[in-house]
Length: 202
Image (tube, rainbow, N blue to C red):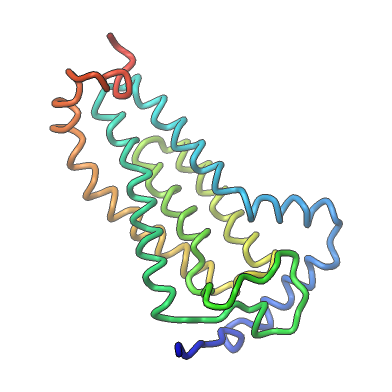
């Protein structure tokens, strides 16, 4: 049986303050944040598509770089998911008797680090390799995702801080490695049937 840890001694009071603020906030605000917390990662997928679509105008190499962004995000998610059972920190909504906006995840769905936050920050960092503007937009969205996970009560603040750090680091390192592929690979693929995916030129 896995020995679970409690993060309440790290920043439990801050977590309670945030969740209490959520309870005292307008319903429309809580509803908006809850929807963002649950479905906001779709925005990052949209930003990746926009990045790829625009990169096609700059040639096959740029398009290939954009297509590596989802790979970097998947790597970050895999690394973050591997860390979770090693730490085995229980969700704050189980360790603290406090009503939360979002239903408490099942036992065994560990809290540290935050997967949503890691994915969001990995996407933001990776998108900077494609477009500084898209990277900046994604960074703002990533901060909003991190905050929302505490607001709805499913993570301690330190969970999202760790998720942000891990996601950013893995996303950066993954893109450093992956962006070495596009030049040669783009040249080989440019003459194949997938050319329209890599360039807007005929």
